[in-house]
Image (tube, rainbow, N blue to C red; front, top):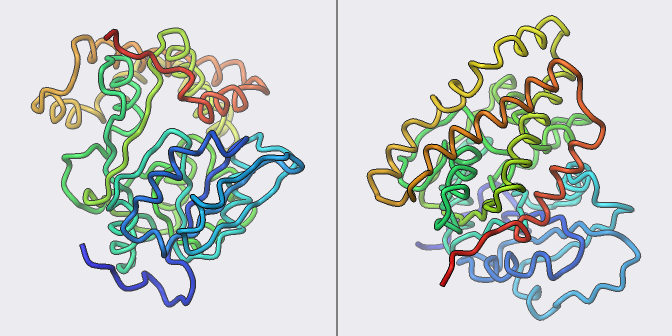
Length: 325
């Protein structure tokens, strides 16, 4: 792939990648993958980390990029606030909120930048499962990223994930005081973009490997928390009557979740990638997520749910089960 023209008129970096971390080691593998990008010399790396720490950054690993910005914050919790700080500090016309457990393949950045030469507000890459030996991993992967799995065709899309996708910076900054809420886990960003008339695109030439929880207890807890956080976001903008109606419709929520993933599940089944038990785990995960939603609709959100989910998010590699050798 030849180097594309800049996505927008700019004399600086073409794309900023925002990484929130507690220390350099946590994002070491992500930095290594970004170093392998075909357009690494056009990337700006924005690292958001706690202030006042004597952390030694690997300058030799970072010097290959167009620029590196260290944004120091008093705390990286909640992650949404730290990520919003990274967006505001970024200088490129296109930004990506990265994750500690998502590893771009070499042509990922170039394909995203090339697609942004078109008037898309958001460009979503194709996701691949980076720990595919577990049915629990596949169930989590399909639930979170099944709408954008590798193998689906390029097309305009209605839903976008908040992370690992390339968004025009001016679109995010246009969210103003809502930015922090929009870059938190859930459907807030996708809902806001659609309401604002912004268009999104799925670009399968941009590929990224995503690690997923696979330890049973942690996996189940995270599925439940995901439902709670989703419902808590809705509770901030929905009426009490609507919340109670959704609570009553709780038994139907798993069916809605699973219906959206039928195409992706069948695609993965045709490729022979899915281990035995994946469909059962997907159903169990949907039930756990729905239970989290219903509890929150009915009783309200506990104050610590976002922090608990954030810790799974930042330290996901701690909750991976490796296959027996």
